[in-house]
Length: 115
Length: 468
Image (cartoon, rainbow over all chains, first blue to last red; front, top):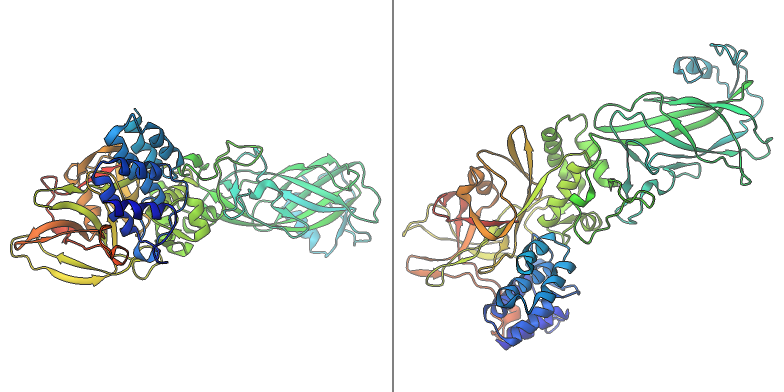
């Protein structure tokens, strides 16, 4: 479990491991684990992801998300997970994710947790 | 009758004169042409089209500098010459600045000025007092075309031969050439197609104006030339997209980023297509159909991703590393053969129980039908018994609730539905790299079973999407 958080933290900090960039599939792998089990550690890293203002450096040859940028999908998944776990407690970062996103779908998705 | 009449002006200019004298200024005929003996006392300095609140003008924005072309006159004597856009059939007005010729006496009094159009409307003559400031220039003087612009989408290349008369002498002021882009109708509000973070305001003096990007207007005026209905215009734009040079699968998800990076993913393409139709006043809907990854018993899942084999616009192959697929190309039965293929395909991923990725498409409501446009992959489909799903990220809709959406579009666009499914006693598991694995960063996603979309029955909510 802790390794998934470490990897996700690294992705958020724009760092690669051993010089090789992560791919979109690695982000998905890490997110599935982090979002799959509620813990304070998961909540902490997902709060960072929801309010992420950086740019993910992913290996583009491995494919990228189609409907929105990796950063917006990261925010979207983070806010959905936090919203399901405790929408009141995480209202601030859910709103922040919607505000930061360049995809209006993120705002649409956030609305259900902010209502 | 004035000198704006092209027939008379043509007769005069054929004398190769650059100075024309009218004997009877107040009369109806300009009867005598005299050879030039002195140059014109002033010259054209600039011609502006897209200035604030000019009726029919559509502000054009440069996608790189993000400035508006009409922030300064589109034509000037220093060599600037950029297009302007108007709604078709507009009898446009323009603003012209003249500069006093050096070494000439200061022109005074009332002048009649106009321009003959060589390949379209000219400029209606105007009688006006011309005054020059200390820099030797007039203020912007408003003129109007002597006829409406062509009444169809396209490009008008106008050439204007300018003249000015002080009542005694008529001078030629030179020739200017202009490209006008003619839209079908006034552009829709850019807020419809812009993403939240794109620059939004119109030109400085008209922030609420409906503007568009220059390349969008240039491309669409060419592709949809002469088209006269929303359906024909959208069809022409779809057919023309390859000529834009824009590609699928470039890391851009909004219109300005796509124009700067020369391509984008579908999240940008459905905005781009909406912007292209919107430049001609056509309103398209856009929808994001998100993959619904539903967990099923025994680690099965349906569906983890939609799989597309087409390379997308201006691509020869999908821009995604090859991976190994386990395809079933026929209706799934206990004995359906599984074919193993290692190839490049796009995978649009879902995530269990949430909304993640998916495909983005446009819809036109026209003559009682819904027409689907998939700009990313150049697909058009007419849908029957279809209602556009409301945006709802909380409930996934089965395709059987969408009329013939599956047969008319999904079967064509999405080659396979990828799931984690048992087959012949074996679980074909879809699995992303495991972060607990020491070799995580070298890991690749394992594809489960990919079923030919056409062979999946349209019933029992076998295929569902979130529509947003």
